[in-house]
Amino acid sequence: MPLSADFVLALRRVTQRWRTRWDAELRESGQTLGRARALMLLSEAGGGVLQRDLAGQLSVEHPTLVRLLDGLERQGLIRREPAPGPSRANLVRLTAEAAPVVDRVNRVSAVLRERVLASVPEEDLRTALRVLRQVADNLDALEAVQPVPATPDEEATA
Image 1 (spheres, rainbow, N blue to C red):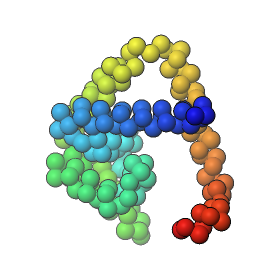
Image 2: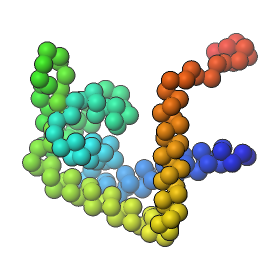
Image 3: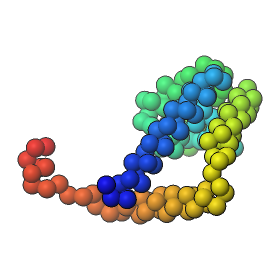
Image 4: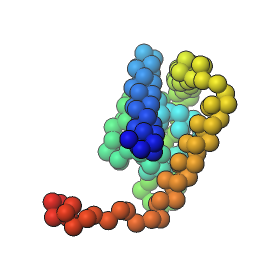
């Protein structure tokens, strides 16, 4: 297997395992991974976030986000309000009741990071971070590039 394929396979495996473990840890504190990620993003934003922007940041479709926000709203952790201007957009804001939940989510996340990464030397983490940033930059640059065209055989089976 080429080194690049090995790298992508390892990256996918780590990502899947990280998300699975993070979700399990968060469920112990009464949140799902999706809700926790939304709470963290809203907290980092410090103010209202347009609902459509939040969907993009979470990489979820609108109906999925609506269900997620409905759950957070039932818990009293967020509120939705009309965005200023003529559009029908909604702003999503954390409520005061969300503060201890966000703190708990951040603590759970920090403990998981420490448990998983404690045995990795700092220099290795710096190298990995540099490589991942380069991969992310390369992916961003591909946004302007046309997708790989289908071969005639692939077109015939589509």
